[in-house]
Length: 68
Ligand SMILES: [Zn+2]
Image 1 (spheres, rainbow, N blue to C red):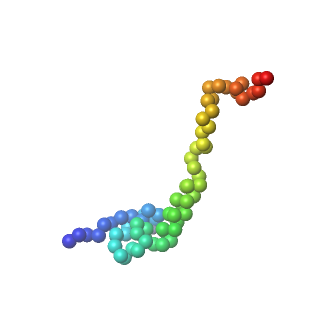
Image 2: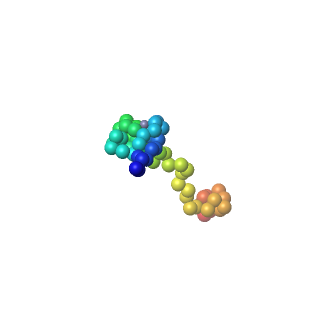
Image 3: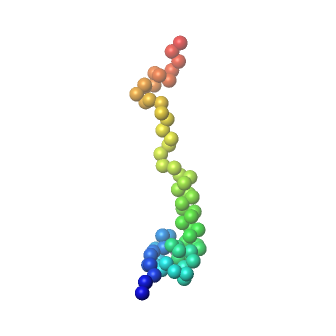
């Protein structure tokens, strides 16, 4: 016998089984699926760290000033 895989809903951590009983697996319900999707999208918007410019910081503030 192959027992159905047990896992926890990533959103609410309720334990479910990988079967037709849970059409929204690995989530326990559509609601949890949407919650996780929303969280994922939010994370995509909040990109950690700002894009680092390739300008060499070692040049110092003087490099930014016009020297004519
Ligand atoms: Zn859930």
